[in-house]
Length: 125
Image: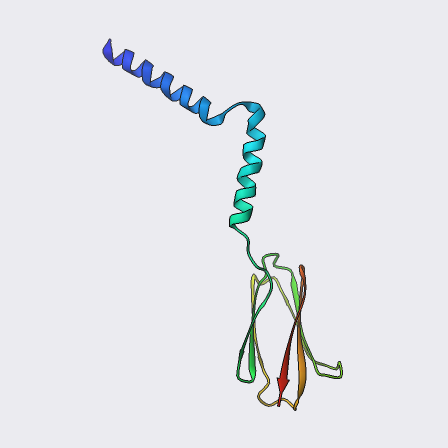
């Protein structure tokens, strides 16, 4: 008889604690919104490409979470296109631009993805 009594008490405590944890049904939507706001703030990711210059080379790395098309272009100082590439479906886009044998000029690297257009200039002396 004691076992049945203890099981009954344990079941009542479990059910009441579950009910208190869930709260009222009117509060349920507010808790979910607050939870997503916290998660959104915790998982803030910078989606701009990262450019690292090493000597006469520029390494570019882009997190492409949309897996959409990414356009890579390089222009000289007169606006002439000297490099053009489209990458589609990769979640990480990496590219090394080597200017060691380039003519003396100022070059602009342009990266275009779903979220914007990004530019980095490189001067070759």
